Amino acid sequence: MIADRMARIRGYLGLCARSGQLVMGQEACVDAVRKNRVALILLDDAGSENTRKRLTDACGIHGIPLFGIAEGTIASAVGKEGIKAVGTKSGGITGQLLTLLSNEPAEDLFT
Image (cartoon, rainbow, N blue to C red; front, side, top):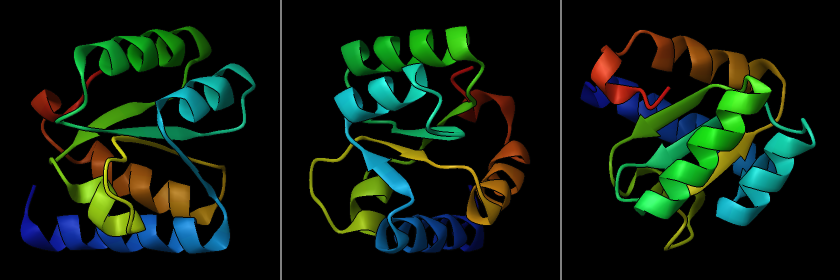
């Protein structure tokens, strides 16, 4: 991803975190996907195989888009170390994130 696009993604994730529109962590994301409380899942490229499989399976079953992003982007955007997965709730910021992410090459996508 180009630097400008990554900066915008970090900014949008920070806004979501501050406004309470973000679900953080693997367990919370899987639960939110199953309950249809999120519209988008982002997974850090450094996420474990178990995390990747659980989120890929849950998102595939429930039709939620899942995107992989560069290592460390999520943690730096939300200001919490160790966060590898986040889900965003429906809204304008999620739409902007989907627009930015959908313009990426196919190898950046998990689904």
